[in-house]
Amino acid sequence: MFNTFRNSQYSIYNEARNHFIQNYIQLIEIEKFISLKVYEIINGNIGQITDDFNEASYLYPFWQNYPPEERGRAPIGDQYPWIEVGEHAIGDKIPRLLENYFGIRDVGLPTGSDVRLVLTHPKIAELTDGFTDTCWLFLDIKSVGPRDDQPHAVMSHNQISGSGKWQTIDGGVINDVMIAKGRKASHLFHCSIPPIYILSNLTVIPVVIIILKPIYKMLSLEEGSSDIGQPLRRISFATVPNGLLLHEQPNYLAQYPGLFFPGKDDKTKNPQKVRCRVSFTILQTIADWRFREISLS
Image 1 (spheres, rainbow, N blue to C red):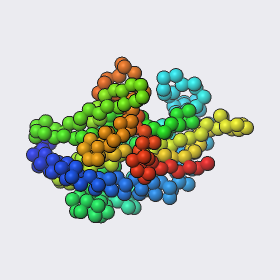
Image 2 (tube, rainbow, N blue to C red):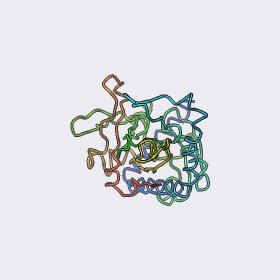
Image 3 (cartoon, one colour):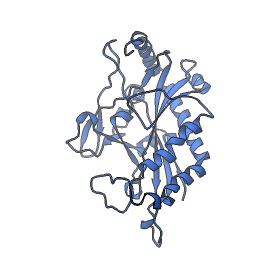
Image 4 (tube, rainbow, N blue to C red):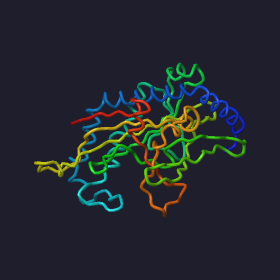
């Protein structure tokens, strides 16, 4: 099975890669279309999302004796990790909310983002002049509290797409190594996601990467509050450029060298799995639709 469609995938992949390098505006337009649609759908269902997110705090008596495990290097101990709250209250809703607008396939893939949906829509065919009507949405949920409310997101090597060079049939797709460049330090970043996939039925599916970042309050830190709880405060939306847009045309990595900067892993981490941060400020500089927010208070 691993090699059943390799020859045809190889030729079609390289044709598609060349197509999107030459017609990179099509990739940008696909990302914009998907990004704005996800934002529109979340915003249109924000009441339900907020209620379900906040229910985790009301359910405190049922889990207070079995709290989620603390994360981070030196947790203070006065807040609860809310990662799974965001993944379920928001992430699990995404497929159901999107199915009213897109054809959806839950295609199997061993690594990638929290939510992976192959989306089909006539608009994509229109944007690509009929080259493809499908894309693969990779969506990650990054819930944080007020102490980690920063204009960036930490991303793993399995959550960013790269240059995706497939030079020999047997070699498979390989990404060029990126440099996560900070003000004082830099490190190599080995992203593992290709910019395009070719399904067994030879459908061309470019990758679209979106970050949803729910930011919650800590009522115990609110001045004058006698309550405790971690209700939803706002949701940030960030759309990371496809790897071909980063490396080829328009080569955002060269234009915006601070787009990716060092993550929070120490030197003992496997170098090929070191994470990086993605700057929301630079994403918004590239295009205003690449970073948007829904504020609840």
